[in-house]
Length: 325
Image (cartoon, rainbow, N blue to C red; front, side, top):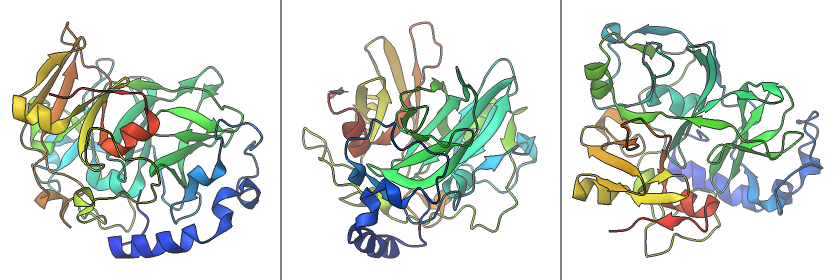
């Protein structure tokens, strides 16, 4: 989530936040979250939830996004990452990370399916959810809170809080409700256009933001994540390396790159060069090549997954299985 313009400012802010007791006291939040039922929650220790800097909606989610034809897009560089969504026979849609870095959530409808397209920069987690629940159709905003460095979303209907990495409500009336994750993937803009010349891409939002720039320069080369006090991953795995999560299993991205892909646990994971890291260089297009992962089942159908940092997988799936070489 975008917090401040530089990592130095981020860590200065961290010191100030950790010094204040308000981060662990929900009564401090009630003036801002008047509809949230703080008595209903799965959070055992409120100190797990911290302010990331901005207030509720300080990072503005995008509603009713505008799309243009892929071949008419001239701003996005070929190696820049996009989230691809192909659903219900509708034209494929690309959601550029250059925009999601600054907005984190896009509420959209694709093929009559209401979706939330989400990206948490601090975890590198890019996931798409069906916004329909038994309680009705929801729309989502950015709470400004973090838990294990992962974005906490909220729904505007009940103001329940949702963990982006797990798609589960953790505070409020909808606590315990799970959103359905839809198959999507991050790939380069060139890869999207080559496959979908008639596809659509989200147009640049009408906000004053440095689109195409990465406010977290060098983040995925650090030794420690921002606002994370949990355990490091096992097996000596650095906390800020990428892993591919399918269910409760995680494959190190480096393994897929080195082996050219694997077939295990009823899925095939492929790797292809060409996608820049959104969390490396000041300019996203100049980021190191982290490649594109696709996950498919035995029938060749796309499988819902996430490419996130190792520390986040361990934090939310502490008993998860590491698929090591």
